[in-house]
Image: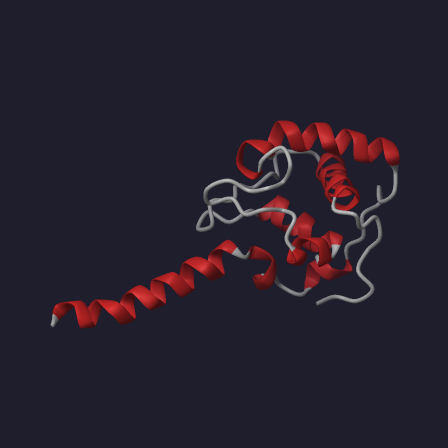
Length: 131
């Protein structure tokens, strides 16, 4: 009989876990307005690739495939995210989701990582409209 009481709790925990892992779907509205000042800059994209390898690949993988709790960065939600949303996630992180803040990196370096992510995902442009 006790296991029946645990099933709803397990469902709620699974729903909470899934929600926390998807940071981009839970952002405040304000990041949409930010634009990447380094967008389509080949030098920024190259610098971003190096920074990604150093700062992000241990969790997200060299090919952005994701590992363990760190999700793949090749998902549609990441490809469609506005640059300001990606910047917000890098700056703030989420302890619950296991995503550290990268506020220790200078703003320019965070934008370089985003320039790399946007180019390597096949979208050098910003989304036509926010989700």
